[in-house]
Image (cartoon, rainbow, N blue to C red; front, side, top):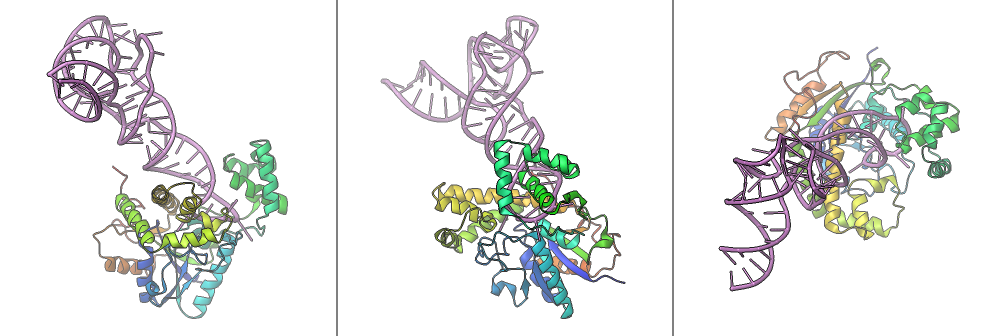
Amino acid sequence: MQKEEIYLLVGPTAVGKTDISIQLAKRMNADIISADSIQIYRGLDIGSAKPSMKEREGIAHHMIDVADISDATFSVAKYQEAAFACIADIHARGKRAIVVGGSGLYINALTHPLHFTNIAGNDTLRKELIALEEETPGILHKNLSAADPVTAARLHPNDTKRVLRALEVLKLSGKALSAYEMDFVNTKQAETRYRAKIAGLTMDRQTLYARIEQRVDGMLENGLLEEVEKLYNAEYSRSLPALNGLGYKQLLRYYHQETDKNSAIEDIKRETRRFAKRQWTWFKRDANIAWFDITPPCERESIVEKIETYFFTNDGEGDTKYGSEGESAGPHTEPVA
RNA sequence: GCCUCGGUAGCUCAGCUGGUAGAGCAAGGGACUGAAAAUCCCUGUGUCGGUGGUUCAAGUCCACUCUGAGGCA
């Protein structure tokens, strides 16, 4: 039986996904599902570059504003479950679903056969483990090596966040993380829920960096400071995942008088560039992405058409890719000179 | 015009009494299994301002020269 198809648009931050996704949705009779770990939160609007109602041009957007800032429990697993429900609903209404976003893990949760465990994060246990680690540095990784050597070998001892989670799953379920069915590199496409057509948007690095600079300045003009000041006044815990997003974290530091305004702004720009780099690294390894270079000058109209054509091309699973004349060459066009 | 102190990685600088260079930041590459805009790992990219000299050997010593800062006139 033929699997249902979903369409995805991915790429580094500030590359221009939003604009193109809306053009595509209009042409394709589609709803948009966001795959953005920060746009999830209500109240994080300007800094997360959440498309305004006007920008959405009447296209329905899902998986935006679905969690509260104070909610520290949102996770990929929840995202995956809710996004799958959205897709089913959209399909039931006879429309297509376009997933657009830059959160690599969220994307993979939809395109790869990732079956997350049913073990929720446990704060008390985490605190205990952190205390243990502080007392005896390295102990956590050592303990993990004994109980789940496969996972331990994969994780660097300093990557406490992941080591912690592995131990958490182990203690709470009695089952090693490595024993859960996962295929992160997606060699088993047959087991994915949908047939995914993924388009990647990329551009020349220097150009993207310049756009990031402009975008941050634009956010400031549009009231990012006021948005963050409100959060500061609300006295949220600063360890909340929502408040560790780019822009929020750095400006909160400024409001707490830990840095001056200009350095905070420079930090946002630098961290955003680094983030874009990490996104490239993430998406680069997914051989199923067809890349489209939108470095200006290039007609956005024609890119939208090309992507739509690619989406509607029947190329059989894992078969040849559209855009052999260049679009699939890879995410970066060239290294920085 | 004279004197002093500088000129070494993209930036700020370190390099003892000669043995063809190294830190921080920036940058680049990578990982990623319920926090992922998070978290973590790896990497030095250099006509040591230029030319000539002394020496087996010069970033280091000498001469000249270019250049920056300051001081004295």
